[in-house]
Length: 281
Image 1 (cartoon, rainbow, N blue to C red):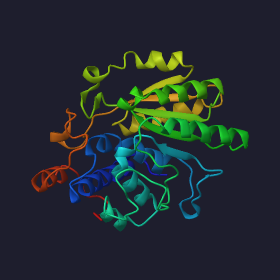
Image 2: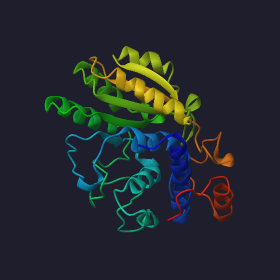
Image 3: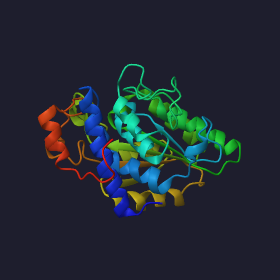
């Protein structure tokens, strides 16, 4: 289990990986990936219980994670590689033809760590709720985690799944919403305002927490709090405030880097702001 200092070191390397992966084929989504890096790093290197050497789709007696906002795949791939699911050097194949590391995660090519294809927004919470209900029925005490984007909440299926999870008292499920206030077409408040997000989730019967998704100490403390309220008859959602493009000054504060790759000069500038801690692939 990595401590806060080590988690920050891993996160710095993951951010470097993200930038280099998106740059190499001039394609991908760096903004949200960089914003969610601290959270997913904490989840995989401090919080979740899993077995990288015996990966199975069903994940019995393991904590499960489902990425619903599949466009942040470079983040997911980097974390999985550093966790030991597959060789780190494979990151160099991101978005190549016939690579296991496609632009959105897929199960077709059998990449360890991936349990569901994602990218069609709105579907991940339904899968996570089903997996969590299965664990309850099988008396499996492990938890299920899911990550969605805030713009993704515009999808109606999210709220169908929210109703289902509450109605079935799926209280071993922890959803995190990446609330950066931006989506591909602009600020949320201009595209489709979400209103009082906390009140909405509470009205749907969920327990609601909030945290700073770019503060490692707050992430660990909030997830620990989430753990303490599992098993109480309600699913849990964490509204996670993040900065899109976190760690790279010219990518922060704008939606324009949601799905745009840096050029050579921009990559060099970005990498100069992030410490190489584990070695570039």
